[in-house]
Image (cartoon, rainbow, N blue to C red; front, side):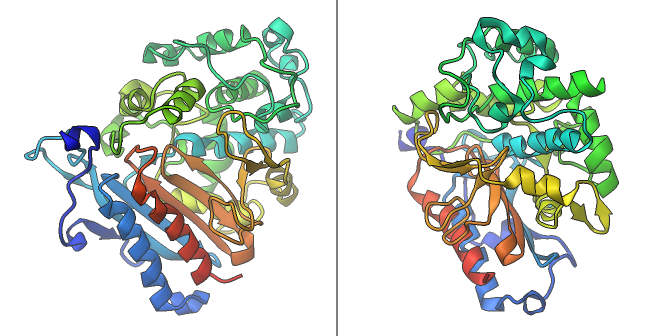
Amino acid sequence: MLESLWPRCRIPRDLREVLSVREGAECDPLEVGVDPEALDWIWQAAEHIYSSGMHPAVSLCIRRRGRVLIDRTLGHAAGNAPNDPPDATRIPATPDTPICLFSASKVVTAMVLHLLEERGLLHVDDPVAEYIPEFARNGKAAITIRHMLNHRAGVPNPPPGALDDLEILRNPRAIVNVLCELEPLWRPGTRLAYHAITAGFLLGEIVHRITGSDIRTVLAREILDPLGFRWMNYGVAEADLPLVAENAITGPIPLPPVSTLVRRALGVDVETVTRFSNDPRFLRSIFPSGNIISTADEACAFFEMLRCGGEFAGTRVLDRRTVLRATGEQSWFEPDFTLILPFRYSMGFMLGAEWFSLYGPHTSEAFGHLGLSNVIVWADPAREVSGALLTSGKPLVYPEIFYLWETMRRIGVACSR
């Protein structure tokens, strides 16, 4: 009975059985100013995340001063979810296993828009309706691209039932048409409310109408291909579907008010989201708010590029001023009418802080994003750190979530400012 109310993955006694380290990738920690014992201390916290049984796979990659400090994975890509039978074929997860970033995808979408502004193809203070005229319906003519990036557009929630059927993902224009009929809940710019789903589709449509190409193609052509990335795009090719880690429903059954907030923000409950995320229709679609698929290494490398002002491994894809503009503060600890908790936001990023921060204490210069439900991608220029902590379990509230924060805290302590 308890297992059905609080599903957990099966965890081996010896975690070395499910550990995979990218051969030859990790540098000597002393070369980047990190004590080897502190490095072990970080990894012990990551092991606690996995040992909670909430995640079939946990993948962590950290770069410090441009060098890979950690690139390791624990667990299974498939076969060890709580609802999998004991005799299911278990596919080991490795650092090469791609995992869905969910809402951390918003960072990538935002940077495509910022790139177009860098090229002079748009301005963030342009009305959305300048590019999508039908969006002006029902009092939305004043909503700007900046409002969308800042979660201040006033249309934070999709209509009930709009995304119940994944078939709609085969027709992005139909989704845009639905969103164009929304009525704003308040005047744009006046309130902060996290736009979990809505803004992404509209921003993606703006990219399409400006360039004539979908946002997946623009991202690959302008950023990913020049950097030599294999993943880090919206969805995957059909041939790559078997390689993607399966997400699992884990943890205590969400109860109000948490379950109510999630359903309102996403349009469906978290169990449905988790099931949808394993569906080929989701994995083959362009879902700008939530289906970037990546390894921890490439997600970390993307943030290393941002930490270095738009350049990675000698290749520049963004102007330094573009990155500074994208990561500059826009909201300072205002009440968020979707997430309830206050956050600092830029135009596309969740920012760090001295105390209340996703990235550990004393991280006021850090920028990144959270993804459902224990995914964190970030960069901390003050510590010369970039990182990606990717997980495939989807619990919401559970006691061992402490170790997620503790892992981030230990990274900050080990990589001093």
